[in-house]
Image: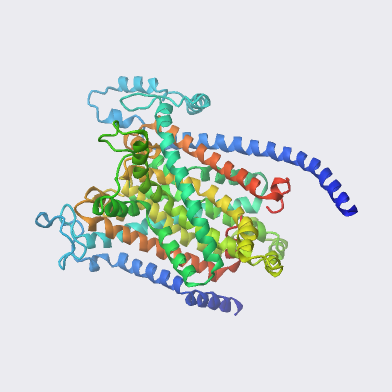
Length: 287
Length: 351
């Protein structure tokens, strides 16, 4: 009963925050667009039409056509699939790694904690994009590789969060009670402590998706991410850059799509943060 | 009078004890720094050597004349046939004297020479960007906090959210499109003009550089600007709630003094940390804007290295860039200590 009440309160709080609702709407809408791409897209995103290359937006092609006469709107819609897929899977990988390492560090403390946190500090010294580029250089730039590499280089925030949560929770009475009643370490960690850390993980995950989408689009823009002809917002922008003087629409819309998507996730994440745990918000900005 | 004397004596004796703890703190700090540095080198090395795909394969796979013997000879020449830990130690030994090996590219130049000539440009742009971030973000955040929930606050909040979500390379394209192509006010690539640059006088050269740097600096500052102004705002809001602010107001200090002298000074502390944390993002961003604006910096070098699978270059770049980040973070730490009288005296109040 109490749990149900709690859920109602935070959902209600989320609903009262117009920015968070906007974020939720954007994210929901994008998921629908990505899932129903084949029905929404007016053209085949790969269909080349040499009679209509670099046409500015018109009624036939709402967002214009590109260098090969492909319909930009259709490519944008299919691009949503790539961006969301990469963003969500990469953050999923990061969350799993971060949760495991953070739990180990927070639960066992001592040298395990020292070692893992040192690793976190070290990896945080690498500018993400440099690290990702260095790894990608020796791999095929496939979508799977990009997701894995982004995931492998962005788990540190989650690890820190989970560790902090473990540190503060493992001293509590209910953990002691579980220990006395004979629960194993693994059980205490996974079913007594971890569920309490879900809220901050959820916030970090939501905010992380926006970051992962930005990284993917930057990589694709640099030509080492998702490879053409697969449409991704990042590699569409590369084409926009090469034709900047003659076709503004090639640069305008994919960027706008990235902006709106990342904005949606960030708004939702901040809204969740406020709704789930006012504590986190208060501690934000402190060192 | 008596009280004051006792107080001064206490402070005096506590300084000695604190100096001792300061010393221990320094030792610990040096150890931390050293191990982090070693970790950076180890990870850079591992990333390059454990990633599937031979560093040589790009050069050898597509060369029909390449026989297995020649390939082996090439591997031996680059030291790739020795065991990994030997290769690592060899590389580390070189690193100590800034010998990062020779680039795989046809010019075969030392990697450090390549990085050295490009580092100043990247540093210059990043330092200018940090300056710009501080000059704009801090006053903006303060104003938003002081006029909490006003229309100004709400507008800046929305703008900050948008700026934070905007991909830097897209903003760069739009700025190029508008200022470079549509208005024709600013040059859109390179560090200086190609035509007539040598005939320019010193001042003209400086002006030319400035005109070329405006857009790159603006673009690289954008993300940090949004983040920092948001942090300034929340940090200011927190400080403004404190009792001593009420006290300052109650004793009749002018509002300006309350905000800039009492509140901002305290609010700035976390901002220094945040600034330190944003350094990797800034340097990482240089890959993007350097490739867009065709600026010959470290980021562009990295990109070239990726394209050519030039792994001595990539490894060197990765290490140098992350050591720079480490140094930047240390600078932020020192800045924090300088700004906080509690830490300056050697007392660590909060963890």
